[in-house]
Image (cartoon, rainbow, N blue to C red):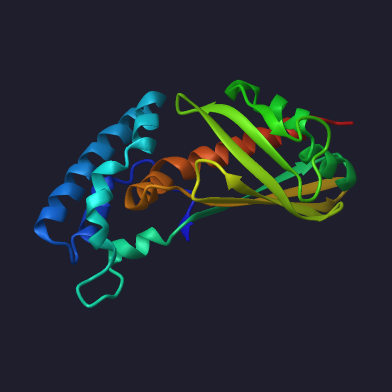
Length: 234
C-alpha cells in the first residue's frame, strides 16, 4: 500500500530510476516525457491551479502504448508493473460529543453529506436522494472536483448499527473506492474512524496521481466532512 501522507517536496523524478529498470529505450522516452509533463502539472496543483489537475487526471493515452512496462522479458512483473497493483489507504479518527447511534445516522444522512460538501456543489442525483441510506441501497453523487463535474455511485455493502457500515463505488471515476465507517463509544461521546482505500484509473500515470495528488486531496475531503459532523452537537 502507498502511504497517504506524501510529502509535498517529493520529486516525480525520484520515481524515474524505478521505471528504467527493464524498459526498452523507446518506452523510456515516452515515460520520461510523461514524468516531465506530470511534474509541471503537479507544480500547478500546488499553486491551486485546479484545471491543470483535471487535465492531468484525464490524460491517459500517452502511456497506452507502454503496456510492456508491466512485465519483464521473462514474463515476471517489473518494478513499474508492481506500481500498477498498488492502491492508497488512509485512516481518519474524529471525536464527537454525540452518541454512536446519532453519529451513525448522521454519517448515512444524505442532506448532512451534501451540506458538508456544499463548497463542491455536491448533490444526490439518483438513488436515495434524501433521508438515511440503508443496506444494499445506492446513491449517485454529482460534484465539482479539479474543475470538472464528476459522478460517483456508491452502495452500502455492510451495516452493523450502530457500530459500523461500509460503502463502495459501483460506478465512477476510480478503479475502486471503499469507505469503512466505524463508531466507538469514547468518554461521553464517540470516536468516529474512517478507513478509505482507493485506486485511480490510467495505469502507471494513475499511480502517480494517487501518490502525488489524490491521497492528500481525498484525506482533506474526509476531514472536511468529519469537521462538519463534529460541529453538530444535538
